[in-house]
Image (cartoon, rainbow, N blue to C red; front, side, top):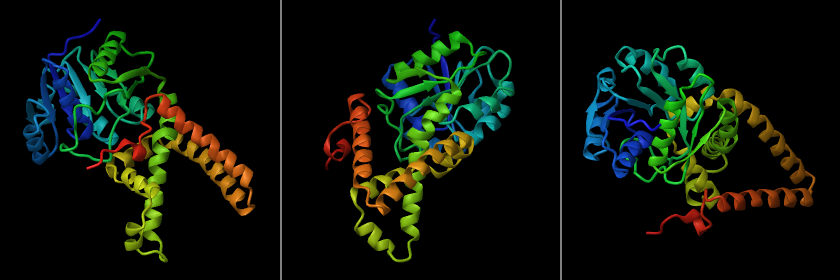
Length: 304
């Protein structure tokens, strides 16, 4: 049965938190929207952009009477926030999160979520390289997957309420085992970001190529890496530390394949290189066919 939320508190008003507020308003939500953040500057921008109806710098006060509390802050802050607000959480309320790592978050929060409060781990797989309250937009979650990772102890009614909540924001919802989620996201999101950070960092540190040349002669592929590498450093620091086991596992597979390509180049193995590249090209086609990307030139970016 769907639960009607009368008061929703969003803790963290950056790209994800701000977009949730705007998407709720677009969906015609009648819930009172409260936004909480640590700095007055963020709260001021949130009010200017109408991300929420009311803001609070005191997160304990912000959750008072809320039916739904959404954690949209870096992963390392979740436990501290719950410990801080737990005594003020309304019995029967739902706490959910938007973090990109699930297993360790569940382990950390399982012992601090108060009795009578439901925790539904969630991960909207949507975002841009931008961050802060200026970055949010209502369409961010449209036709994007949101993965919910319940455990055996998860309240089924609360889970259904959060599933419907994300569908109202435009998302497609998938229910997944937390450990499997972390493995899947390690290879589809976390490793690509790690590679982007590394490639851009390597280019920046080269002694025989100047920074001016890196900027001047950057090709499309490198520019795409710089876009990814411009993502929020604190958020991604936490993702790698919280999903370290899955990331290291997938990084091992990646490193082995990279060594195969290195060897193929050294040995002038054109057949291996062409076969490998043809297979990866098919993956790109599958992503487009699944509606996760468009086939437009330059990734469908709008031209000014």
